[in-house]
Length: 238
Picture (cartoon, rainbow, N blue to C red):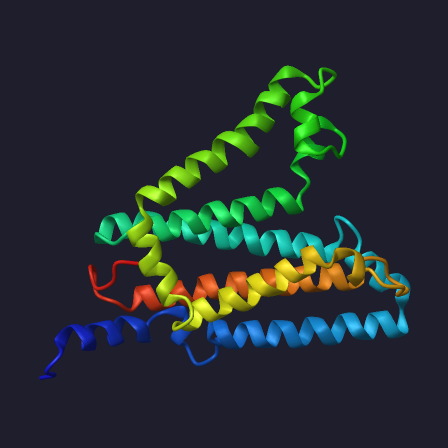
């Protein structure tokens, strides 16, 4: 009989999970292989078939659709973790903020204003323009004013839970994946003009680095989900 029965039970559950199967890589390994395979494929396309590379990285192309699907999947998995956290008595604030973050990424990458209004328009102009249908303007106010304000208030009220979560990020493998993905994505957004250098495929490096950010974001979510599933209920607060 083990001295730590709950640890044995945890290991038993982990051995039956998808990520512990020998034929399935860990989320960290999955991130590595996705990055390597996609990088090799895109580089080969850029060198030998620039037209194919252009189609792959085009707005609404395969790479962007895959990137958005990764963010959407990570958001849905985080939403499921909110429900699990409530059932297990863990803090829900970290997962709820992850849901909000991935939702914002999906909204930003899908150009929601273009889908709603029919044209690309800065949100302040969309809100102030009398030519825009009033329900669309109210939707923009909800999206860029009300939602961030509500999230800010919620984050302040749950600051202890979020601080405990943030302190784990550099130490945990899932947190390191989040950090790498976040840094890559932010650099891609801030250096958009510099990344769009003269290559046969327009926006190649911008879309490529954004895709890498999505890969690490999804794999970080999978890594955290796998870790939490191996802990006894109530064993973690974040």
